[in-house]
Image (tube, rainbow, N blue to C red):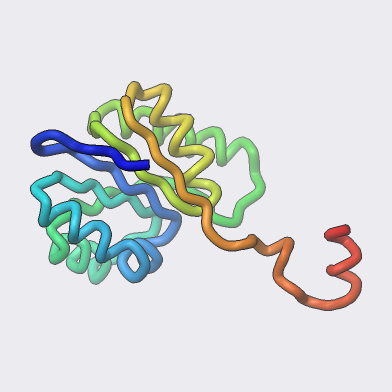
Length: 141
């Protein structure tokens, strides 16, 4: 699917780690900036080095709350509501999310916040499909 963007577009890229955003999506972010778009790079765990690296790509680092591996539904709900308000305030034209939690929460939060174009990418097999032994293999069946 091709999406053609006219003029300068504000793009939100939602990741679940600053490290992942820089190392696996850094080229994508740089290319978006090179094409004249404003990129908001969302990650929950920026340190100063990460912020500097994102700025060097030409993007703006945005901190947001996300418990990557947490299972507390109340914390997830709180983080989701905060993300809706953050996206509403920043008003990106397009949202691109990857990894499971940013994809689930980000696309729904983007829809509620009124972001007209939302794209998600789920990668990998996840923990359930990583071979760890006979017992774990039986659990998957």
